[in-house]
Image (cartoon, rainbow, N blue to C red; front, side, top):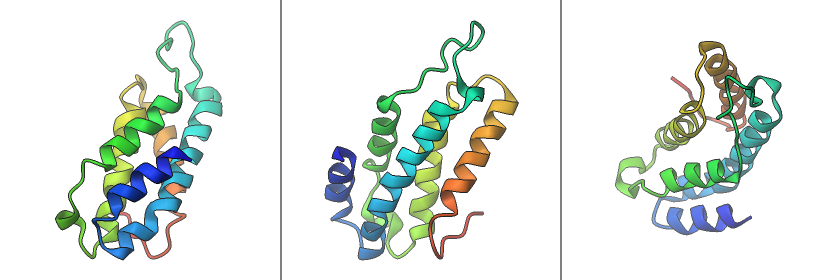
Length: 122
């Protein structure tokens, strides 16, 4: 996937721990995108006509990650994973208008975060 190449080339400047996260981050980001896209809660309606998600959201998440600097995340994968979750929330929740929808997104993000061994979510 093109996103893997983009993120991997950015993470080459980081330590090995962060670089090792790349494939899993892309896989889990795609999983989140698919879950949001297929979940009826996030389907467009006359009131929520702006609930339309496409691959542009994936590219915005990766773009946000590529704005990171290696020195800030050296030896701390949890900090980089928090940035990833932040970017997912920023991209997807910006369109959400109801608290119930935000709660549903948080459940999806929590499930995605569980896929990282040794990671701790505050």
